[in-house]
Structure formats: C-alpha cells, structure tokens
Image (cartoon, rainbow, N blue to C red; front, side):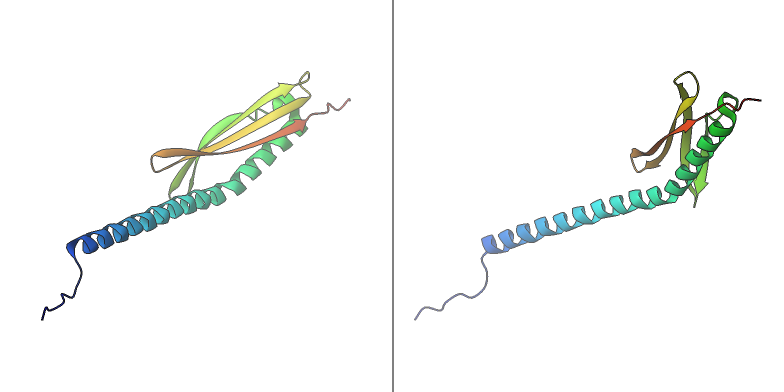
Length: 129
C-alpha cells in the first residue's frame, strides 16, 4: 500500500511567495503615493491663505495708488519650519489703468518643486482734483 504525500510542492510555495510579494509591493507603492499626495495638500493648505491675502493686498494697493504702488516683489515665507518662496509680478494693461497681477508660491517637496499660482486684476481710476 502506497502512502500519499501531504504538503506543498516547491513550485506551489514559490508561486505563493511571488504572488504575496507582488501584493506587498503594490500596497507599499499605494501607501507612499498617498503620503506624497497628503504632503502636497498639507503644504497647499498652509500657503493658500497667504497667497490669497498677498494677492488681495496687491489688488488694493494698485486700486488706490496705481503705478505708484510698487507692488511687484518676491520673498521667502517660513511656515512650520517649511520654506516657501513667493514671487509677485504686476504688468499694466490698457494704458496703465488695468493691471494684471501674477503670484506664484513654490516649495520643494522631495525631489520635485511644487507651485501654487494665483492671478488677479486691479483697476486704477485716477481721481480728478
């Protein structure tokens, strides 16, 4: 009488190990992609209020003072030990009564540079004396 062998063959163990390894790699990849997205949106939320406020200040200055506002500038912002660089540029449209305002805030996140952009317009109406 022949005894029947019980257990797994080497091929079955290798295939199972390969499938489980692939599953673990895919789970880790999804996890790190999620962490990267979370980091981006966390930094985005940190700087969005600053960008909106800076754009509003430039619009207000240009609406009140026109070409004398001197609104174009750049600088560095540090929020929770994270450095953000910002650049504000103003260009006149239609004989210096309408201005286009471009604001860009950038930061390093891992090997990439990320950027948040805001655009707006300001109208300067010269008051006659």
